[in-house]
Length: 163
Image (cartoon, rainbow, N blue to C red; front, side, top):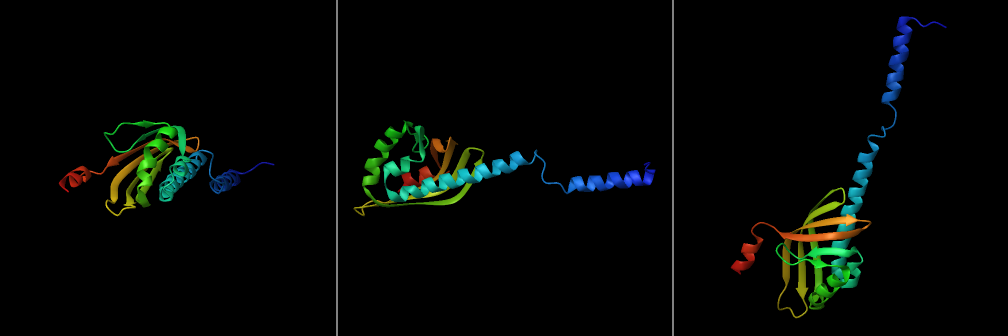
C-alpha cells in the first residue's frame, strides 16, 4: 500500500504526538531519583536533630557512622569516631533537663544537607541555659552521618563576647 505525501506527513505527525505523550524519558529519571534521595536525607538530618530532645547520647549516636568526624563549632578540634562522640556529649547532656533544636531551613544537594537552626539546651539547675544559632553541615553515606560540622552565623561570636 502506497501512502500519499499528505498521509505520510499526517502519520509522522501523529507518531510525534504520541511520543510527546509518552512517560518521562530515562534522562529525567536520575533527576527524580536525586530529588527523592535529597528529601530522604533532609528528613534523616531533621530526625537526628529531633533525637537530641531525648538527651541520650547513645540514641543520638544511632544516626552516626562509626567513623563520624564531628566539629562542635568552627575552630574547635575534631572529634573522631562514634565512641569519642558519645564520651564527649554525655557529660554535657547530663547537666541538661531539656533540649530543643529549632530548624529554620534545610537544603540538600545529593548526600550533603545544610540546615540553619537554634540549638536550645535548658539546665537542670536553672543556672545557665545555652542557645546556639548555627549552620550545620552534614555529609551522609550508607544511611549514616559521616561528617558533621557546625558553623556560627556571622555576628554570633561577637554577641557572645559582649555579654
